[in-house]
Image (cartoon, rainbow, N blue to C red; front, side, top):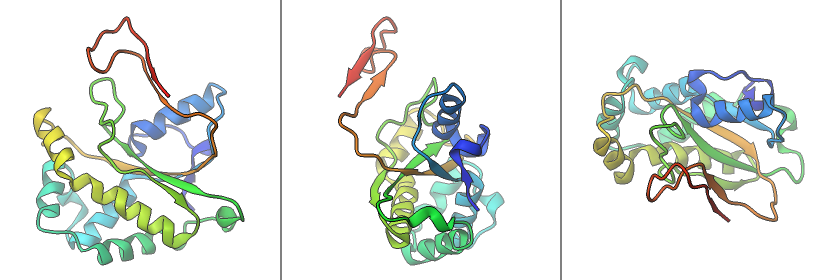
Length: 196
């Protein structure tokens, strides 16, 4: 079974977004239920897709080197299916349940690096096929020029790269938005910015 957000404790292999959501749950905030596909599981999928050993995929630069040779999307889907087929709960696909797949990287949503909008989030997953395609798209988003440029600009190519996925129940919200504890345009730490 995949770990569930409400029963997990923060770990490096979960990435920052998931770990921060776990902290919010521990503080008593309401967070929609979710499953965790951790960084070790993503690395296993990538190793099978690229037909390499997992230790060959430790840094961002190593992962990019294999990704630049091309990604076999069918092999990636197959590797994801193998990882998921025995790990999903029977209650996951109850009528009306819809999921969103979100990234949770080791540097993403950190004090130093936001990664805002770099990795793909895919909503409206209603069945296993939707989920597999969403997870594939989120993983493939690692290899976009925008992500490569971000890592080069911040000199992060040699950093240990861990990338997990959050499979979260999607809620129908009346409002949604993003809150910044400092101004993302100016860096001013005495300003709070809310985008709705």
